[in-house]
Picture 1 (cartoon, rainbow, N blue to C red):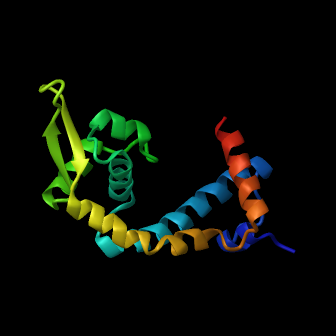
Picture 2: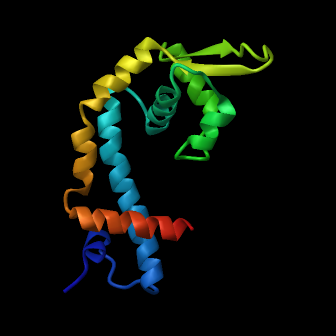
Length: 151
């Protein structure tokens, strides 16, 4: 019987199991990204914009520097400055001067940004549902394996 990734991609053979795993991870990442983007689009946000808002909410009421946000981003290749500029235009975040060092500029989430995230919190069950095909034990094992893969 053909494995599911082979059926999904209509590909009979992979170079080896490692190659198959890499292809499977990339394919699965894209599927998960699409499902998450459906949720974030309810507030007209990209995944990167949502990630920045989530980071700022976690640090709220303290502001964050762009470099701190970049360190915590899931997508390390994101152009934080450009994304923040778009969020500022929408009134979801604001720039502020540091009280300790006026040369430093920080960003913080606005009430409007907090409200947008609060509305998205209502869809957490849909985020969790992405893993519904796995048992709790399998999810824990998957987390452990992914941690090892990055290690």
